[in-house]
Length: 176
Length: 152
Image 1 (tube, rainbow over the protein chains, first blue to last red):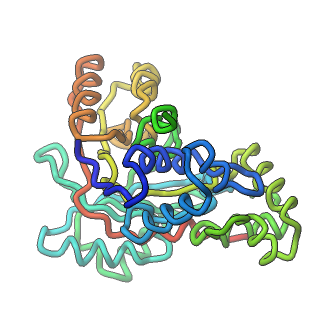
Image 2: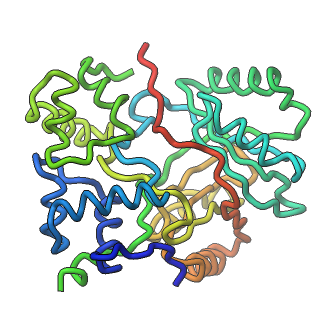
């Protein structure tokens, strides 16, 4: 198994996994959410808070807070823009784009030739298709990204969207 | 745009990261917004019921716990909905979108390890009769501070 979660000195690995699963599902919306999780996991409140802090420190949790559904808020146009960037430049260009305010994801992925030549994936959201296209054109022009081959893939139907469940529900096992 | 109160806007915009790690986090948020703890909790419950927030919780770095990949299929239009539903039915699939391209169905598979992902990919290939484009992430360049909302 390629889990890289090292257990906390006083936490069992199963409890860490169960905590991660609980955080994927969401904190209880009640006055003492960490205490509630602690009770489910057989821990105390302070241990839960310490473990969350540790998961943030070691770079497992990227952020914790309110997870917004942008589509519901009127950001209906979402474009995946894929770029064919020479390998030796892709990290530099990827980091640059990842830092732009209108870009919400910037990942390097493998090419699959001949069907798929693109190696950099960015996500750009906006209120309308025209607004998103305008942003992309501006970006491509301003930063000379239009010298690269790129494609804009607008989303149409959203068939499914929820948070990732990396860890299967092990809460019941962890309680034993 | 959906009409939201100023408190809702602040709740949505200011607490996408750095959620308080203290015994009563909603009371801390309440203090910052100058409202009551009860009001914060009720507002979050309402925003969740309305589907504006999916949860208050964590977003994880990709591939540190478990594994994921972005996959795509070029599906004939007349069977797109059918194939899309088949794909969505896997518990390991958490995002599934139609996109405007020859590869018109894009989905994210997340599981505990690469073998589990391969099993899902093989299964989808077999059931759809289509070749799956498997595009695992190699590098993540994005610093996620949440989604910056602009109120018009």
